[in-house]
Length: 472
Image (tube, rainbow, N blue to C red; front, side, top):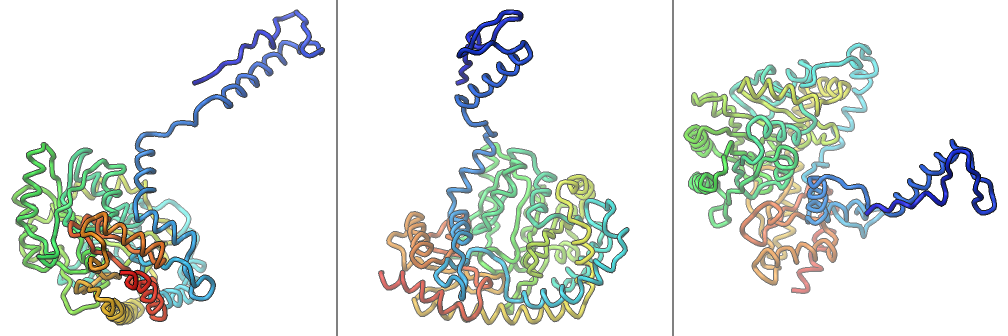
């Protein structure tokens, strides 16, 4: 509540001289200054803190309570380093690949001068199209074809470059749905979708459970059930968002399932968004198939198909903030280009990536070496966990293991899962992602990212897990 201090005793009328603590009153102009000063002092000392929006309050409180935020903060405050901080918290909660960072560092050190410094200034500093320069779109189209091994070629004119895949997801949510509408997301799924779709666009997410008893395989009947339940509640479902390869499981969607998905969205007259940011992270024998390949070759209505891609995962460049929307819908593309003014990528970054992606020899070498290193780390990590009776779901892609740790829980519930997560963070000092954060309905599953550490760190991680298993 505001408290206004009476000014009669302090501020004097024109031409009248009173004494304040033995001094003559100031002139009229000085009186006005004193009046303002006193009011400001009184207001500052008695008013409440400046109010922010309810949206900001909700976002802040939700994030600060989530295991993801708590674990991330712990790693920032006390980061593990084998040499300088060996007792710090090991970050196994972020799907970031550091295993091939030496290849990226080498290429940048050898090529940054020619790509940027020796470039004409006129190619770097003027305004450029918000949705990305044509040279980068062309290079990305070729690169995506190389990574995805597709039988079709992507059209640069059907691409929008965004500041990371997060911006791509949000842009598509604005284009495909209105506030209060919903999208179906097969789960377990990355927790980022809850933020990316809802925070600003106001689009609701409806997790569609895939269960361990079914090997986490997507069921069209589950999609049908979720769609019908939403319809009964008066909620309009506008799209299915699919993660292929899956995050957090690491499995791949086969052609048969894609056919069924395309039939489903066609029947419901909704959209299909395929998030393929982990394409190129394959380390197993299963074949990755892009939804673009199936939609093109089988004669489906491509205008309802949209693809999300990026370089954060496939080239280990999250700091460059490069995401891509590929769409076959003219209205989505034109609208997305207008939104691009809010998330455009700097031109120097784009120019550097044109050079990198156009270096076919580097790209091929990088993909081959990265695949071998990821597979070796995956096998070593799985082998290490097996000594504790901890099993991993068979994975063919991604930078993580989907791990069943239910044998270490006191109770087979979400509460028991979070208690174990807390022990892993505060006793073992390793940060992992509990399955409940990924909308997993089966308690006891955790995503553990193994590409943020080296081979030499694996025994250290296993020794820390042993702190928990020894107390069981």
